Length: 301
Image: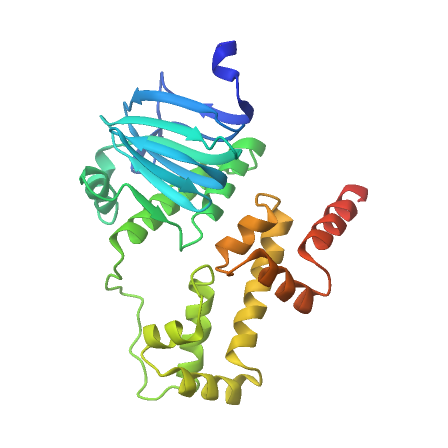
């Protein structure tokens, strides 16, 4: 990369295999990495010679595919197909950080379930989705494996790429397929309703904005759901949701990838003030104080 190409890049961890792509299970890997860029940084419009997944970690910007520009915020996932024109730029008022994964499919893609990934990238629709499945986690682990080169890194890299692409298939297709691992349910398993709530909260922590909406999606009225939950769990449903959101907030603060405002938005709080109030009430200190204390302690260790 020449000096002009480096302008506006705060940091980048890039692994490129353009001359000789690496076979990773059902795909051939061309490039994977993480980029942090300054405000108004641009990657100019270019032709994609392979497929690419872009995951926005933090900040704001825009992703353009075949002249169609879409807003990009933390948690957004963009698919760019081979043969499309592609460009990325950070907002003029915001730095941006993102993961990228460039690949093409090989002969193993014809086997289920990998053929679903090929079908997804062969379709014309579905350029952008917001992550509701924590796809950032296998992305982060993939980058760590390639950075630290632990024992068995090759095998783990294959595993994380497979996870990322199959989770993206699930996210974009928005359907649950039949599975050999689903047992038959007993007629009235003990605590089934409460377990359904607990699983829902765990899997949708970034999208819960009201008890009423959650109850409707689970097929219950909110008053019944709240009463049954409190009887079994000894705490209100709203308190449990808040507790789980604060646990996730602490985890995200400790990761160091997000601003406090971004965490509040990702966890569906109406405002930074309401998030900070809930955090202080649950954790005992403000989000800013917790972050300062955590990284100060970590630095001294």
